[in-house]
Amino acid sequence: GSVVSSEAILEEMKLLNKPVICSMSNAAASGGYYIAMNSEKIFAQPTTLTGSIGVFGVKLDASKWAKSYGVRSDYYPHGSHAAAMNPLTPLTTGTKENIARIVLDYYDYFKSIVATRRFLSDEQVEEVAQGRVWTGEQAKEVGLVDALGGLDRAISYAKAAHTNSDEVEIEHWPRSSFRLEDLPKLISGQPSSDVDFAQALLAVTMGLEDNVKSGSVEQLLKNLTELKFAEKPHFMLTIDEKTALDLIMDGE
Image (cartoon, rainbow, N blue to C red; front, side, top):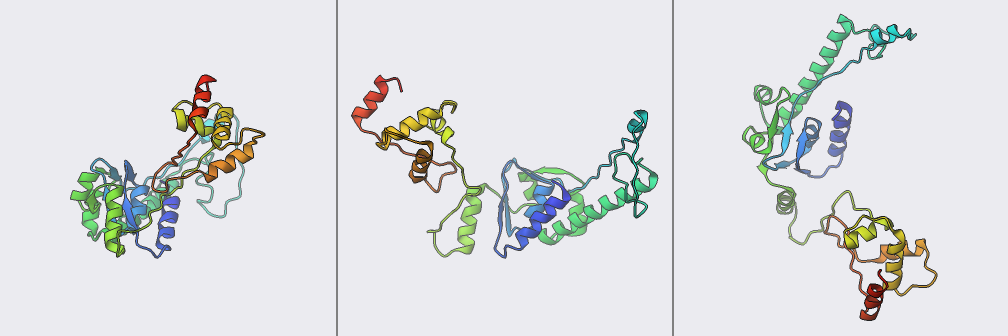
């Protein structure tokens, strides 16, 4: 991830003033690892790709290409490097040195964050940094993560460390959204391309066959039971035997 975005997320996490437990999935490297530094405990899967403690910079130099087509730009810089990142500005020796200095400053800052939060010396961090990517199992061996496990284990740790009871409410974010056109796919496993089918099915099951409008159908969807612990909404539709047979005979 970008330096600016990663730093912004990390600072927002600090403002939570709540314990943060990190569960890494398939990958949490570079910026993904950086934002985990505010975590009380970090869990990773054995095959998670993480680490990648490093920074690089890119400068696009299209000056020769632009010149070959007669394209030029005018600007009024307020300093010697004010227009350095303009793609039509040539990459000079001074610009190279400036970019290298900025990249190294970011890199040193990244390493200092890791050293502080992971209780490692600067030398230990440098040994595992330099952009190297580690699996979760390797990361645990070198001290970049605390334990192996997935989301369930992270939740179990949070319960044990910060609650007095197993009776806790768990919210999954981002919350699943449901669209009316997705209903046929949820029911039959087929591509959801027939909204009329969804409306007709809901109308029959709820006893509203006459004068059904899309808005009322969407409202019915909101009133259907949703299992809060599930990652995706689950709906149970029940109809009487006669109606079910009628639907079958009509080819619905």
